[in-house]
Length: 140
Image (cartoon, rainbow, N blue to C red; front, side):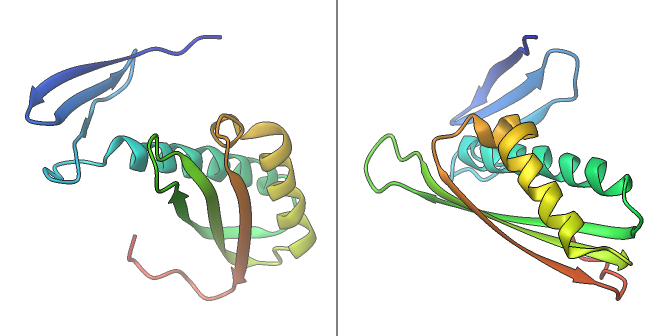
């Protein structure tokens, strides 16, 4: 399987990024801030990859997920190429009867087997999670 994408320079450090068949997104530098930086896009990709794994794995279990959020933080090396050295993912589940052992198993499967985004990086990974029964706020 191969994936492809194209970047088109717009102005300054701003680019229009488009996957082969998908919608476009603006990427920019920290100075322009009209879109995420390339390194932020990597974090977003890892968060999305593991989030899909979580929902896929946990829908097979008995609990009912009513909302779900992922907070991700990446620490970068001080020297160039400033790669990610550590990534922390916090999973926040809202719902009923979500079992911690099911969450731990889903996280393990994502980390060890399914999350190609995380597996593509040379960074230490750690995680935490919360299971809450209250409905999530409307904030993103």
